[in-house]
Length: 141
Image (cartoon, rainbow, N blue to C red; front, top):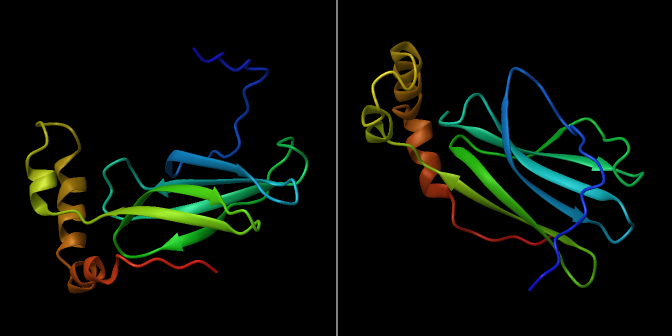
């Protein structure tokens, strides 16, 4: 049986009331920095999101301003970070391509209808539809 970790403090690393932020991934870089990546989007079911990173050079006492690390037209939702043996960091991203059914099948009142209409108009745009077909590759740099 594993031993639970001792929680020594809670800290807000990033907060902006204009965004919904979720699904963090945290690694310690080869140089000792902490790198945190997370999804930042308008709302939980918004059809487009960014993967954002912040960095701490002092063991989490302070954090950099957010930097958009990955952005496409579709919903770049969840990510992970892996430190390779040579110190390079791989970011893996899971993206969602929303369809009208995702919104029309929500429980009544889940979101204001004007919001759902705006989101459905966004996912109907040709560039949104085309963006879903551009994914599926890997790159390590």
